[in-house]
Image 1 (cartoon, protein in one colour):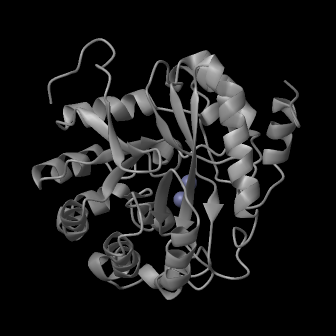
Image 2: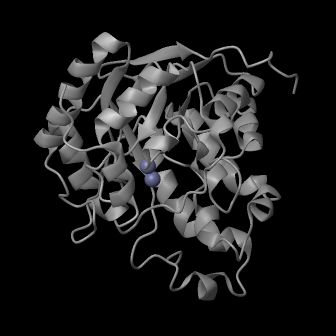
Image 3: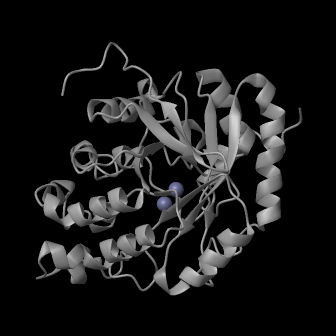
Length: 312
Ligand SMILES: [Zn+2]
Ligand SMILES: [Zn+2]
């Protein structure tokens, strides 16, 4: 098997590309082993990653991660980095070819996408998803150039505003994304806490569960899965998107569909802290994660916790 690029080149290029997430993940014990699924991964077919798909595949084989889903960014705001970054057919062929190469080694590779939801472009997103088949579709609200959460204006935005008004533009878009019916899951549901750092902390949001409740209820009502995304654990907010408490609240509200992802943009972050995420889901009362391999959603059993599942 020939590789187009080496892991070392991946690492080198990752440091040079703009929009790279600032990840601080150096603890090797955080690397997951023997897990069924990592459903949120970025390769060099995203503008903010330089990982060759084979790097993830090789690690998945080595660590016993049975299934991975490549969810490279696709944005619909002209001029943004992930707008028309790599044509659909190239992305699809890259993932399907890798799936064929690595399947015999015991890892299933799925072709997903992370689409930036923006209500102004919902028609374009809908048209795209109607005519392009993905195995699994994540819809995410990201900070954008004119966003009040953009680093250049977030300080002014939070100044003098109550918390619910501060986060309203973000969660308003998230609600529209959920109700659009376009997505299997919503990526990093409360990532707004990252954009607000350090002006507001995760604890500030944690004290106001009423703010997230309508969003959780919309997930329950629509059947869209809640993603437990571990990237927040390696960023300044220091907790998952969303927090374990929020996952528990989702369950109490009647939520039954959850999924998990490391949101890796670096090869060593495949599966990062994902065992903890699975444990947290189990503690919240979930026995399976929901995923899609094209067609209808499937349920994948959550493995028993390492050393036994602690009582809540
Ligand atoms: Zn995202
Ligand atoms: Zn992502």
